[in-house]
Length: 393
Image 1 (tube, rainbow, N blue to C red):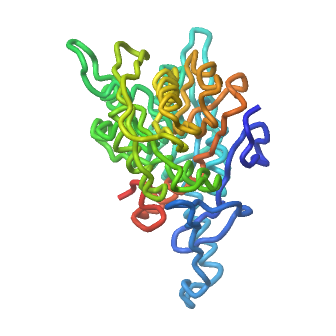
Image 2 (image 1 turned 180 degrees about the vertical axis):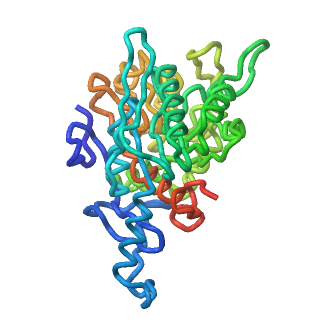
């Protein structure tokens, strides 16, 4: 069985780590759920969530008016879930202190998708939680139909919350006569009626430019860093490893948060899609705990060959950290082969029970996405610490 970090009381079957459940309506912040551990940044220093006291509320603002203001603000926010990852959507709603919106989604006999909202969204800010994970085409089409349903129901704004953005790797032409599918998918989402996109750890930053609507790009780093800080690994023993040259910027930012740990790079030559070959290691990992950082694990070819190289070069332990666990075969057999001390992922993509293995740890990004959703709804910037990494302007 996969190791359990902190079981969720609502979803005990999943290994999810929950942070402070505090919800800030408008100018007043108050807790809606029991607080667990706050997020930690910069090597484990507790950041927490700042609570405003009663002194911040004007004396002329009566209790009734305050309650009315909170009620009016929250009732204009609607969260709907597609069928791709309903558990994550439910956790986001719990963080926000809301119920998931009622929606009917079904498939006809010929495979066509039918969507009907079961409640009014007229004049509301609607957030649709739907990663375009496998089956990517089914989930993408479902998202488009959901957006269209909300547009025709007179929603004020429609935000597509896409924890995992499929087709993100097709973001450029590497050979002649190739398509740039990431741009095509961005056009489909825009033309279907979305006003905004909230995405988590896009494969490459330039994908934000493919959208002609605002994109809020959040990172799963705080969640993973929080967990690593709890393991109390000495900073002198750490080295952060990028599994390829393209992930150096991501690994460098990650290393800076881990007490400015040293950086190593695996030089990789790819000979075909989903086929990787490790060529060389840049940096010193001998006797150290290596933290391999990537945005996604698909077939695990890149990261497993990199881990094998790290062990050859004398690494004491190897941890794999990634936001998106696509886990296409034969990923599970590679990851559970003993190369990794622990494989740390998040729940942007739902994981089937058959894909769990002893070294696996799943962390929840629900609070991260929930905080971002509230700030978008409340027209609040993400520039205030500790949320500067949320990417909201």
